[in-house]
Image (tube, rainbow, N blue to C red; front, side, top):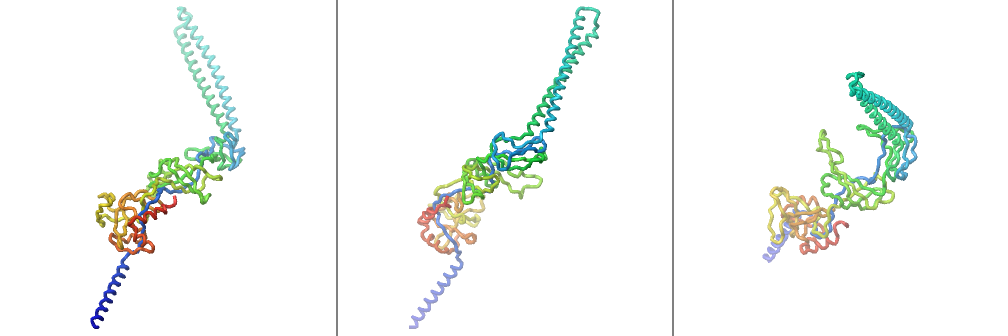
Length: 436
């Protein structure tokens, strides 16, 4: 009887010690979420914000200053090419044309007068030269030289008056052109999207350091573009002809398809060496032509664009949250003859990889990733389809080390139980990446 009591006590003590050990192990375990490597369709894109602009628009300025006396158009009005947009007071310019016409008439009269003087001087020189050739004493050598010189002078004066005629003709052409520019007509068919002046205001001519007045803007709204500002780190991924999805704030719950037609070769805001560029954001302008702009679209509407830079169909993928970094000095790779190792460089101090679930512990495994979708990374090498990996949380993954003990959160335990047979990958493949 005594021996039986002792045996019972020993069993109870062993059970108690086992329970306490299990509790300690449970307290030391990191609670994680897991997910199996599955096949998914991935879309790599670059997102940026911007605004809507017509592909073709003309900002109307003036080449002559003056008061606006006619303004027969209104903002939002459709106009045809050649239609009258505004009229600047032409009185001063008409007077200038008349003055130039008078100057040309005077220059032509001077030319005719000088031509007659030259002809007379030339005849005198010819007559004296003939008399000298006959050997008579009626003309001296000095008189002949003076007559020839006078004819040459009159010829040069004739050339000068001819140049004055050309100058007067050019001045008349200029004044007539200035008079024509007081009448401003539509350079193309389109809509007046901006009207900045009123009748009676004075149009100002721009100079190098003082831009002139933009009187109005005529735009062709049949072809519209989304003009977005893309960060310098994303510009190399974008290529001409890339497809894009554009969302316009004024048209909620609608997505418009477009194509990249222009990529800026220099930053939107030029670098200023004097102020330094360490804190300056470097953005580039990218233009996306909309294939079917909606009715009622207007310039300057806010827009957000997703430029599709690459796609993958049914490729192995892991959650973005699974990828982490480990210092190369803290990781010692265990060779696996059935699985090629992810490439490593001697210069790399941090290794990209994931924590693979092996029972109730995790092992760090380096991976090579490809494109990034919205929620998943493409796996190029380093891990097999169907392998269960730790997918969260961020805090839990930061706490994990190679060989750490884990406790799987909730229903994810079922994935870990059968994740190595590949079924998890097929289930994930059915869900896709993000509906695209």
